[in-house]
Amino acid sequence: MNAAPDEGCMVEVGKANFDAEVIRSRQPVLVVFWAPWSPACREAEPVLDEVWRELSGRVKLVRVNADQNPHLSLWYGIQSLPTLVHFVNGRVHGRIVGTASKQVVLAQLEASTQNPDA
Figure 1 (cartoon, rainbow, N blue to C red):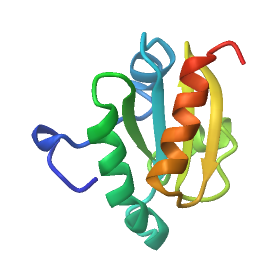
Figure 2: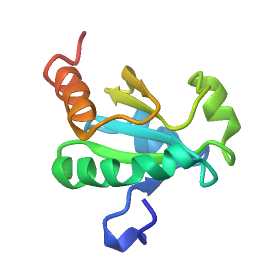
Figure 3: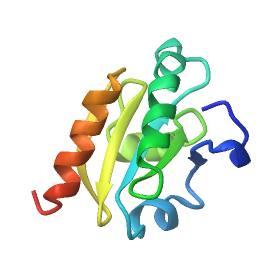
Figure 4: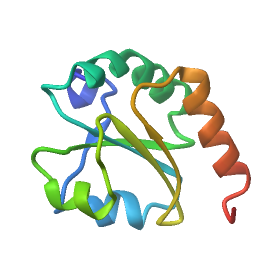
């Protein structure tokens, strides 16, 4: 997640573009709430990079700096970092709190993507 945007990094979103990038997205979105000081967030980076590469084009991955966007963190009930929130058609369809394996993240996304009305 430290790569420059032109190197395939997740898009950084905040108050100004959250609605456009997440809520109104036509494709499923995985939002990673993170903070640069968090050891767990740094530990999750390689897994999220792998997920991003595998799902590129099918699921949009974005990240929200929780320190810079406390209103979004409060709105979505973020109490621990990292927290991954999966959106389909502008609605929350899943959540993973803390670090998780690539397989766990992919399974969560697959389950919600296959049954978006669940």
